[in-house]
Image (cartoon, rainbow, N blue to C red; front, top):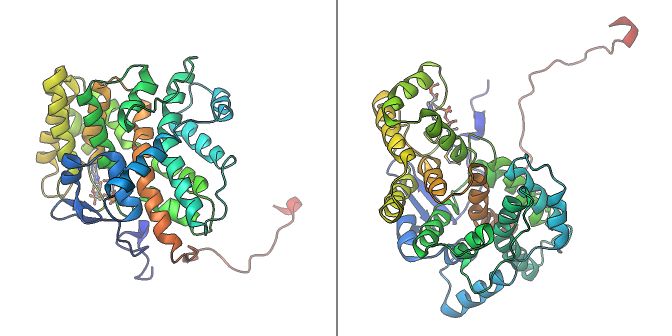
Length: 377
Ligand code: CMC
């Protein structure tokens, strides 16, 4: 095998980017040079999305315009709702989201990606409409009518309102907003790369985001947040955690929510999410899942010692969403709702010097085989 073939493109740069940076040895994640911990403490999801998309923290007037634009584009066309009504209710929420986002591209102009003004409106629409689609699907599958967005509510508050018809406790909205910040961007991950491959053909941004949603769904990527909560529920009680972890490792299976291609220490997002769990529990009581998770982390720490495998972003996020009463198969769509700003930031960045992705392969098949007629095979 030639020395330059890297399975999974591990360590191979696919772009030059100034959007985010990960220091996997020290556990540092920055968006446009600002640490995520600081953004969680001081910023909001919408402001962070602006930072990612346009490279700087918005001035007061820029922020006002951005917030107004996103707020006024939250509604979705009744035909998108009708499309979702036709999907099987037992289907996965990520598939419904992907289908609805792909269909958005049939309603809005997106083909001319050289049009800077139009690209701005595509970004506004996608950031604004993903939460509406997720909340609509969560209700439609039970035969309930979607709840239209309320313009007087902030981004995260409005999402809860569309889900439950009541505005959430302010602390919930704040914690949820922090979760969105933590999921908004993460360098050249699989879903971002997928979106960039699609974008490199100059496809419209709705197709780009639909491609990224497809890649995010898998359990090795965003789908892990769902698997973690399923695992914690299966373990049930903290005293069963160690034997469960031993069983997973002795069967050479992967412990969901652990390990990362880049981080060799605990993912800084997992640390912030753990703090958010504690703030939430102080207000609304603890979660049995959290006790199990702590024990899983402790057991994994001992059994995987020295291997550089630690909790990642997907380990603690689901515990928060579960405590907030959100259904498990909506966890990865929540990830997509946040990550859309990162995907679009990379899309805009790549458009400035676009080059079609067309990698090479190492052919390992035969040559000059004769064609054997059907009757002789
Ligand atoms: N549990 C047990 N062993 C693990 C784990 C894990 N979660 N992750 C990695 N390893 C071991 C793996 O078995 C291998 O061991 P060995 O060298 O003895 O064969 C070694 O570590 C390297 O693993 P790898 O799968 O080749 O490494 P990778 O960089 O390709 O994988 C990963 C990264 C995220 C796919 C992997 O850690 C994994 O499958 N984790 C579980 C799924 C998960 O939590 N995914 C979320 C990732 S972070 C957020 C996101 O992207 O959404």
